[in-house]
Image (cartoon, rainbow, N blue to C red; front, side, top):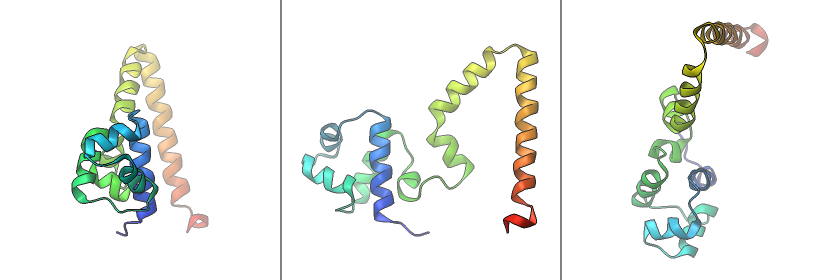
Length: 123
């Protein structure tokens, strides 16, 4: 897999903003000057692996995601675990009949997406 410096920088910024961490706070976590962190986040400077590990820990994003983005179902589930937990909590508040209806519709949508993805026009 190719690691594109600009994409890594964008994901670092997204992870920081998602956790509502300021650039100054992130620089403090990394024990670097704010300008040094800005250079990492802008893609001007490539971060050290130790810095990426700290960023992953502070933001709760997997290191793999910072480097490559979401590539597997488990990456997506981990990256969006807070949102998925909220969704499951809300889903469980629905009456049983509504939960069955939502699941039926989700299965129909999934089957439709599989059909579209395997149609000859999409090759």
